[in-house]
Structures are given as C-alpha cells and as structure tokens.
Length: 291
Image (tube, rainbow, N blue to C red; front, side, top):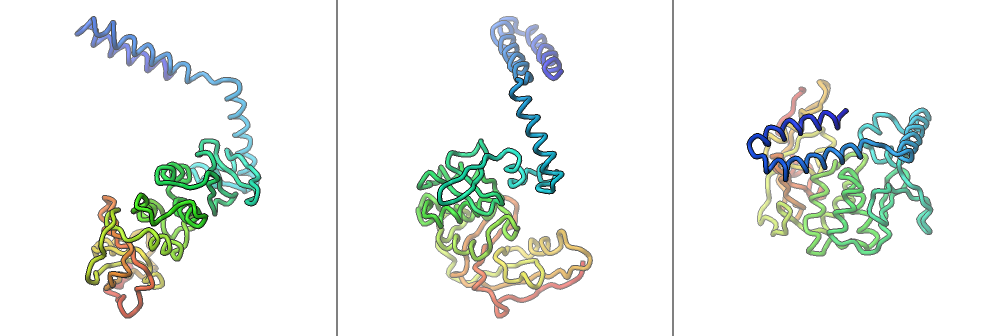
C-alpha cells in the first residue's frame, strides 16, 4: 500500500516535470523513480526467516513481561537492560563470566545482565573507537563505559586526544540518575581528564567564581552549578511538588575546585564543581519558598 501510494505521488511529480523537460524526465527522474519504487517493494517483502525471527522475539517479549523481568514501558523507552533481554546474545567470557551484547554492537563490546559494567575485549581504545562504543552503550551509560575502560587501563583520559570527553559524557547523560556512575567516580574522571572550558583545554580562572544552584537542602553541595541565578530558579521549581521546599543557593568557588565549564546551547551556563570545595562556609541560601 505504501509503495503504491508513493508510486502515485512520484509519478504525479514526474509527469509534472516531464511537461517542462521531456528529456530530463526520460533520462533522469523516470529511471530514478522506478528504481526507488522497486527498492521499496523489495524492502516491504519479508522472508520466512525474518517472519520466524519476529515471531520468536514477540513470544520472548510476552514471556518476559508476564514474568515481570521487564515491563512494556521499559521496552517502549528503549531501556538497554530490557532490550538486551529480548535481543541480546549471551556469552561466557573467561575471567569475566556470563556477559551479553547486542548483535549490532562493535566487536568486543559487552556488558553484564544488569548493565552495571561495560567491557571491551579488543585492547586499547582511542577516541575514534570510544565514540563508536559510546554510540552502542547509549548516552545514559557513557559514564560507566568511561569509568570501566579507564579502570581497565584501556583508555587514557590524560591523552590530548581525549580532551573534553568527560565533560561531554556529563552533558549528554543524566548525572545523579541510577543509570549513571556516582559523584565520587565522576570526580575522579574529571580530574584525570583535566580542566576544560567549552570542551577545550584551558587555564582555570585566576579568581573565585560565583555560581548558583537550585535544589533541596540535602543536595546543596552537588556538582552542577550555573553562572545564572535564573537557571538555578528554573531547576529549583521544575518538577517539584507543592510540598517541596524550593531553595536557590549561591557559592563562591575557588579556581582549584572548578572542573569544567559547559554550554551545550541550552543556556544553562554550567560549571561542574568539585564538591570537596563546597561547605556551609561558602554556600549560602539566597531564596527559599514553597511553590
């Protein structure tokens, strides 16, 4: 049906152009259109093998959902743990145990069943290979990939080719979520990767900077801050319930505790801060109200 509809649309446009330029129609558009239509027709035909694989996958999904191992929502959102349950290939790797991977992943990339660690069995990882591995792992899990490759000695964060790689993973991921590494692990990665400003190596400011953060009281010594108080107000209020105490804090941070400045076009103007440089001596509440 799709092929027939597309065919009619293309033929209509082809006929329109043919009235303007018969030669161009005969030698170009007509031949190209017929080729496109034929490719679409072939793509719409499923082989018995493909249909059998689809049926097997659907049956597996039904069993996994009914047993509670995964949920339909997780699968719809593409949660990696759920996708691996359905489409993953499991392998026993000597010294590492049972690991799993998707067939589309780069050769040598594996994770464990709960996606808490990643492994690359192909030796040293340069920036180009890391970028490919990160695409497979997904932005939510990039921090784990960085942590594990660094810990295994397969990726050198101090190498100039790796400049800004940690700040990039921080900006794209969900720091603080259950899918990311802990803040102490983030801190180690940032220190190994060196200070960056907008993704480039730079000298730290030569004087303290004033930054703002909107959060609950217990999170006032977190790592993510902004140069703009308006951004802090936005983070303080977004997603909060009417019973939540909304607080905006200001901090005066010494240069040694500045890890990276990030601006990805979302106007958050973010400073990533080493929490060891924050205390109630330099963090103060500037706004406090119920929303």
